[in-house]
Length: 433
Image (tube, rainbow, N blue to C red; front, side, top):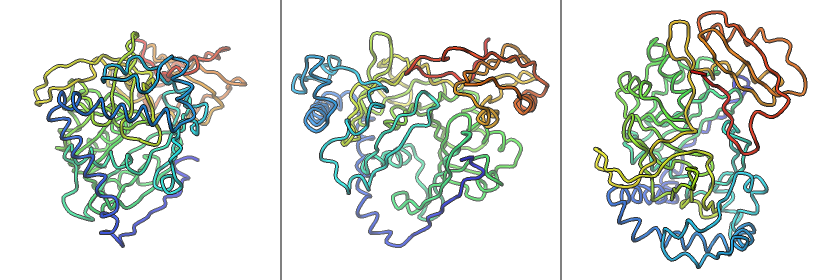
């Protein structure tokens, strides 16, 4: 359903506030304490706690799921073979294809109906590959709120503000809810295709704004025009690497702290940069990250007890290094991260522009896969896979003209074979510099 046609369902219930905090507030507090404990002494955490948590996770996976007993058996290894955290490297990896084969095989047998009701069964958008279904339990769903508090984004007083998640995807639901664990404030998913979206965002004036670099780029445009007026305490970017220029610009325009998260939907946030150009400091109390021989990042999720993901292949490339940082962090970080960079095009004046602005037009075409390539300021190629040729591209040409500031020279290539292999992450936009 197009965002503009989606129905906003507000839930502004404030009753039983103290009861909600009593029942679920401890989860957020525990996550904040774990984040602080790891950040202050990452090496000590790894030596004293990680091995024990990995043993528990491996045992649960082997005893409580349908997938891992056979998975471990084929690799000739058992959960009890782990003696130290570094032994994790001998265990087999898990791919997106494995998870796509059936989420029920990964869920633990002690998952009750109440646990299901407290959690969320979700599905990735497919923007970085074929969609994957996953389950987030009630305990680990509080981690994002704890991370916002840890990064200094908590609202100043109850019922005063909240969190807005910005979105620019071509089709996406929008919703609003009340957060008893965020000082009684709200969470609002806001799509820029909504009527008066900039006015709504200005009226809400949230304490935390989050989204990918595409949506934060739209935020920056509105701030510069003066059509968006907000003063958040924290802006959190995820999904793709946030450019240094956009990070600096948002900081200057809002005065907010800018946090760039390395995150995947299946696990949530995995690492955070303390500043533009810095490495991504691991959130080691939430997940263990390593690399294989090819440099692919492998994630073992420590926060979701009902959906064990052990050495899960992210499809992203990077390196793990222990480099002291000026912020005081002395633990391991992800450096030279690739595979999660938001591609930018250049307009007529040589300025960077966001090519995802034309995605709503592309989504209306009958395309199974596509890649839009900018070969020059006004020269573009559309490579696509479809069951039938696309004949009318006038809407796309108009959208590109508005994006680039001049009429494009658009060539079209209908491909006979898929643009990406199964499991490979697509690159829908490419600047052939």
